Length: 504
Image (cartoon, rainbow, N blue to C red; front, top):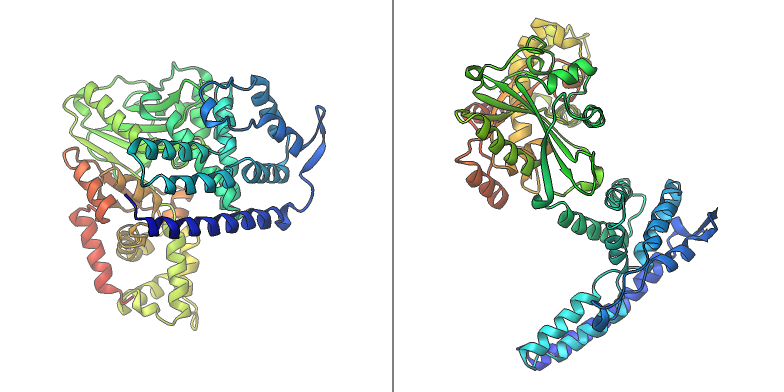
């Protein structure tokens, strides 16, 4: 039990917290971005945001009647959805700001119950548990109850997924720095994580015989290697290819996350052979030629499900599916893009030039080779020539330039993937995703994506993340808990070269 002096001290701190919280709410309500009245022109007889929120967001039932109170009419949810969809971007911001501020947690009741919980600490366990349950219930925001009711109407779950996408855009664009908006995002994420748990998801294989609507969405949602035409799409769901998607009963006909797989003899080292090869379009699969599964594209289709773990679960489910179809399949690997590498490299070169440390990045001999290969104008710093060169795709057409730049760019890319960190984890989001799944950073591939997009994003380099099934659990735990990256000798060799050649 907690000692009496500690209870008194904490009670005092809770009172102070309560007054500070109320003051903060009052100040936030006067935010200059929402000084104008929370109202809009008349829509369907509704003239005020305040008016509709007061009508459709029901008060939280008392603790004693929480299981006995009848649900609000379905029309409340439909009215909320209709009204919100009718707003423009600016009005949506004010509407969500008001919803999160005025229809969240009753801070006064929480403070009072927190004090009562402290007073029960010297009593029996049953009394303490009851007080804790009361406090837990009171911490439920009013709008969370509204969201639960919305999820039960047709199209309600999809509406809430899109609503969270709007909230995430508000946060990322810094249109509002209100802690209430962040709390609203947390409540939505919590609900969506429950509704989209693994047991409620359905794995579907997409084929050319799938409904046209699904095929069209698969094409539209492809974010890694854009689909060029219907023939290209037919290739990606045809022989020696597999396409899988997670769907949910509450969002029929709407793929949530899509994974494209190539069935090959060996682990692919370039994307051209996968997305631009049409020789097998109408051929029959030869099982003897299938030894590897290459995950070459995974796309989340719903921005509002960001942070809800779907992609890693999809890969694991697909691995089991493929093992069932091809029992002798021995190799599972991604062929992944490296978004952000070119931007990081340009920033690094700019920083080195600014600080007069360009020769700390490459060796003197390498700078001379680049100077000769680029025919730099006398007096122009070679680092500027290199930056200008890399900002264009033209260098990829020169065998001489490719030969000079390959060792430099490969070791820089290895360091970017392996050595550049954010809070101790891989800075590159694709690397972080696969490493969390327990994959090994296995092989860097030169000129693996020669498309304009591939050259612009990662100087044409791609990486294989290899899934050694008997090591994924161990690798995942070491990465998540100790921030240790599993990498092959090839990758570690490039990292070592970077550390020796660079003096950063």
